[in-house]
Amino acid sequence: MSKDPKAMFSIGYGLYVLTSKDEKDSGCIVNAVMQLTSSPEQVAVAVNKSGYTHDLIVRSGKLNINVLSAEAPFSLFERFGFQSGRTVDKFDGFDFWRTENGLTALTGEFCNSVISLEVKQSIDMGTHTLFIGQVTESAVLMSRPSMTYAYYHANVKPKPETKKKGWVCKICGYVYEGETLPEDFVCPWCKHPASDFEPIK
Ligand code: FE
Image (cartoon, rainbow, N blue to C red; front, side, top):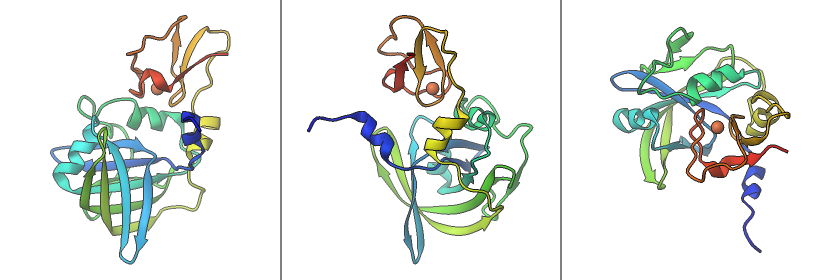
């Protein structure tokens, strides 16, 4: 059997805003969150090393998992996923509250639960760090179903204009116009590589 990268899309995921804080607050979008044990409650989160939030988690040893609901709009993904906390304040003009650990948390508008973690182990995965943490507090904010990765791809990210010729980012929907996509191309919105683009049919 050879390898089909599309097989990975069959694994089920949710979508989350991770928040952390050191000299300032920031947050990012992640999909790889998993409860490992219930007694004590331990959760694993994989975070891309290139993001500012990654460095905040390394320095503070704390993070909040904000579980997005299916109603979360694309603008929320743009705010937390398609810009860097190094250059912008992602909470500027955005409604939030603080959990007991001092970190920011999303309100119940598009977030159904908040889970606070204290990092107990960090595993170097190359491009990502896998943080394993113990739950220090948690709250259910509202009862709407959680956003899944599949629902995001089907209903939230913008559909490319079919008249255009080019390549579309499978992650965020950014359209690159042109016959050939440069091999070293990086998506200007979500920073994913050329391998995450597919031709517009
Ligand atoms: Fe993208």
